[in-house]
Length: 217
Image (tube, rainbow, N blue to C red):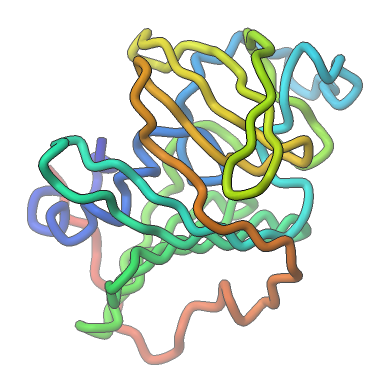
């Protein structure tokens, strides 16, 4: 689902960019698992590693994903995701596009940059608050098998998404999402993973862009 405040005029332009964001939990800006209620301020960092995964990368990372389109006849979309663990910022770049997305989880903002038109659109970041590094995910999770995706080991965790559909998400021990499956179909799969420092410049909004307000439905 595209964020409701974007509106029809800009929805088509942002649809491919936000596809993964609508389907899956962090590190792509999304909130798929139907998580159980958590007491505000509760510390989940000491949770048993067999009871819940880290769902936010514990380190800076650069991942390229293949994202399945809703229509099986449409080729998969490739997106590059970069994450800063210290600043809780994320950048998502669809392959071959002049448009990309910056999310600041501390400021709770999502900014879509369109270099082709030299504009930017900022809206509230969709989804619930990000689970901070060092904290395991709240809610109900079922520990599954260990897999190898993009040459990286990960553990498959079963849960149910916000639509009640059976889902399985494979997270590395340090919280990098490597694969997400819904109703037995792989929707997101990592192709390359690099754990390397991400400089502030990666997440900086370019100067000189014109503000384009989000359309309202």
